[in-house]
Image 1: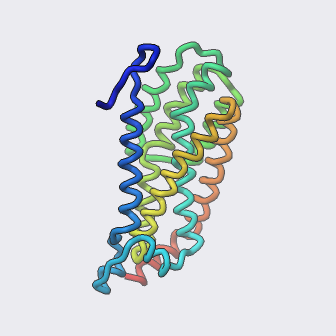
Image 2: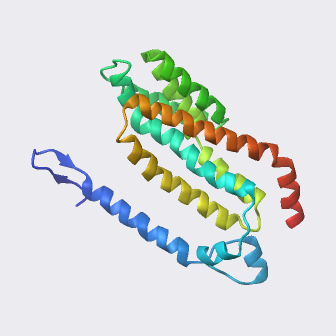
Length: 230
């Protein structure tokens, strides 16, 4: 069974989370053991796992930046998704801010058209300084749009395009960085006050913006290099 009952008679979903954790752990091990579909390995007619691939891969500053973006962009929307309602209750005085989730979801749909991490940073700063319900609703929508709506997927797609010879390796590392963020950032947030979590999110998002600007500045030369490699 995936659900149980606590001593207080409340429904507990602990088994479901433990089961998902075990599945993720198994997948994590399989990623290291089984071959990755890198273009250079296909051309050479050989296959190797992630560990072997890491031994033979030279990482540029740009590829490292893309991997770190996997961490920062995940932190931006996960911190908001898990902690913003606490901020609304304790700092804004909003008794039931659950409607924020609806606006957040609407924002993710709009993100199918466009996304922008700089907007996330500006939104977080405005929410932290303004502290009212209208800003919380707007913030939920904008973070859902600019942060959660496919930014991680965009990062992995860019990796595949810019690093064709190691796209399997880089993509795997981006996703590992994202998973690591889910654990470390949310664990740290659980020990903080809501306003402190908001500040941490601003710092994390700012780092992501800087990394994104770096990759953007290098984009033309990286595309040229990728085409030359092909």
